Length: 360
Image (tube, rainbow, N blue to C red; front, side):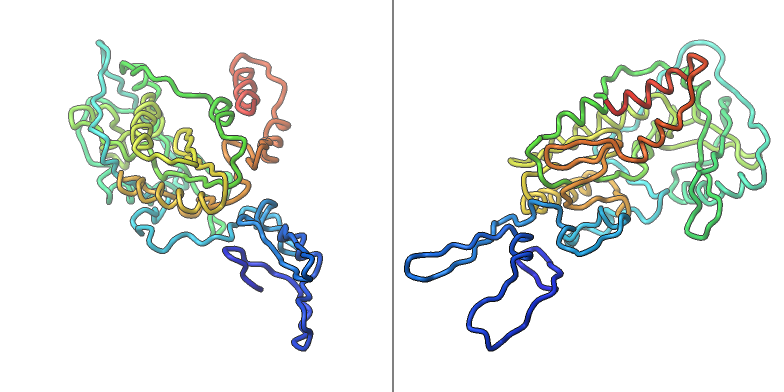
């Protein structure tokens, strides 16, 4: 293993210390996009481009498993604040640019839907989630005339101990019908992906952790989101997932935060809680991505380090694989589309159109 500038290269070399000239091999020269220049004086010079990573960096390895194709060869800078990284999937940041949200409601009786029975497995599956949210004061005990049921959803993937895990969901449909929604325009995934510069060669994909929960709710509006857990009423102090205005509120705040972060050569685009940084070179991408992470930290965001795609020539974004001048649907999305059955109702038809339209 040798290092050429920022590039680590694995290669089999011929070692002959007594040889008076360089015996660098043709296959390695090709991998490095090298140029050999001969002069009339008999001198020979070897030139390497500043960015010798025009091809996928992993092509420098003889064999690469599919699961490592998205591994970056560039380390994350050590001076990135540790508090930027979420410690778990339930960790929540607190956006400094967010003001407590006041929710306006319609006239008429308030929604009060009782909690239906849950299985013991489902209760235990979300217990640790609720305990974590309570420790962070995201959920608190309350007394409210409102109530909507919680709905633990079993995840398809098992955890690292091969145990079934659950997603903590609250059925807020009754609340969503009772509130006065704010107006917001959110770009479609197709429009967002088409705005990515075609000349971009390197990318960073950032996943913001528990994005909606980082927006506080005004004390006067917290009672609207009450639910029952183990015969006690609880509510949220931050916007929960499933609330009709959570996406709009977060998108507006993130837009404001990103407007304070400008780059000369890179461009950022975002959809919900995903941020993509597109750059013309690895050097620029490394420089600007560090600035992006530090600024997000200053604004109070938290990031999932496990989901971070760091300085890569190809990344997964909005169910697409992105690379220089190319965009293709991921194999997982193709498989999901192929599994769709023929729609026999308007609801199923909308589901099919939503899945396929997402990949326009």
